[in-house]
Length: 116
Image 1 (cartoon, rainbow, N blue to C red):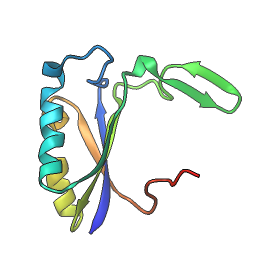
Image 2: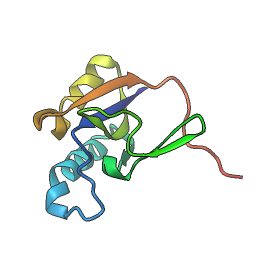
Image 3: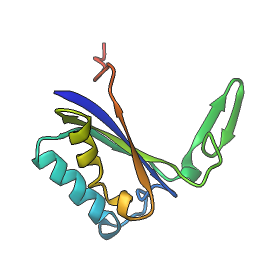
Image 4: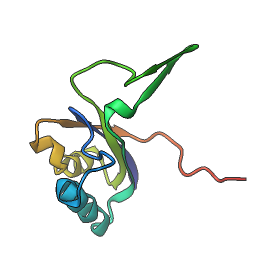
């Protein structure tokens, strides 16, 4: 089955270090639902944009790489039979109904890296 990366775009990440379980409930429920359906391969929530550090050449700056209205708040990898099925799954992400959006991209290659 094909794998698709779902990149979550929002004003900021909901996963602040001090976020409560109640604040994260819709996101946790969504991830649990995808895992129970067997679609979820991996998921990563990113911390808020003010915790980012960017590197461009020899320059290191605080903050996200680009100053924009929305940032990548997290991403996950799903398995789906085709792009239409992946889009149907991605459309259920809570951020889509909270003013943000998602980007769905086929995974070309890769996977867990074996540590030596």
